[in-house]
Image 1: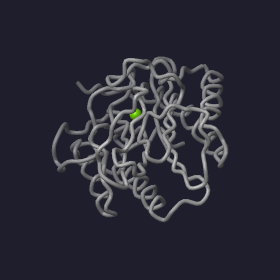
Image 2 (image 1 turned 30 degrees about the vertical axis):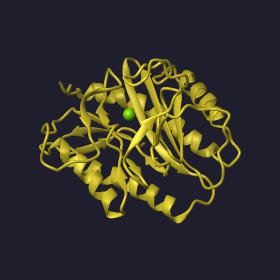
Image 3 (image 1 turned 90 degrees about the vertical axis):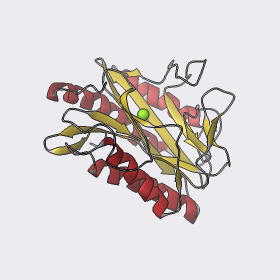
Amino acid sequence: MIICKSADEIKQMGKAAEIVVEVLLKIESLLKPGIATEYLDTVAEGIIYKRNAVPAFKGYKGRISKNPFPSSICVSVNQEVVHGIPSKKKLKDGDLVSVDVGVQLNGFFGDAARSFLIGEVSEDVYRLWAATKEALDISITRCGIGKRLSDISNSIQKRAKKDGFEVVRDFVGHGIGKNMHEDPQILNYGPPGRGPVLKKGMVLAIEPMLNMGKSAVKVLEDGWTVVTRDQEVSCHFEDMVAITDQGPLVLTRQ
Ligand code: MG
């Protein structure tokens, strides 16, 4: 069941989203070759607690893992798609790093991800990054009252294909509100014109994941880190979008 939110609830979610944005901007300012991804996690956690919020991913038990997620943010580098665990591993020139941040504030969740380029990247990596970012931008324009859910999905796949990239099929976007993951699931592929009709008050976390190579992914032995099977680079962006009378309202861009 898709839960539609009141204007006041969307405002509350905007406050959670504001903290997510603050964390992402801070992390962006720290990124450089040589920085350990666990340092980013420490900084992120500090900001989240300072804002009286709770890191939503820490201790989270997903459907795929028996052990709870150990960190406050997900940091996924190169062939890692999503759910990478921050570690002592250092970023290096040419890396593509996806940072996913989730917080809970006053009972509502905020969730967004950005991919960043470290130093000089190859032309192919840049193209993948730009295509993923644009896929999200395009999909947001599909978030109008009366459109269908799969119009979002289709627009993402279409943009990926334009550059010869594949989308990840095993992980999807989601509704968000008083739960981090609510209905509907938002696929990054499929024909348009299907699924639920978009209604005022729906809040969607849309998260395109584009792969340089094939779409197949697997989960590593840590129970969390999702990587491409062919070890090719993957890119991920995520924004929270509220469906309103005035059109799509992106809560995680302030
Ligand atoms: Mg999400």
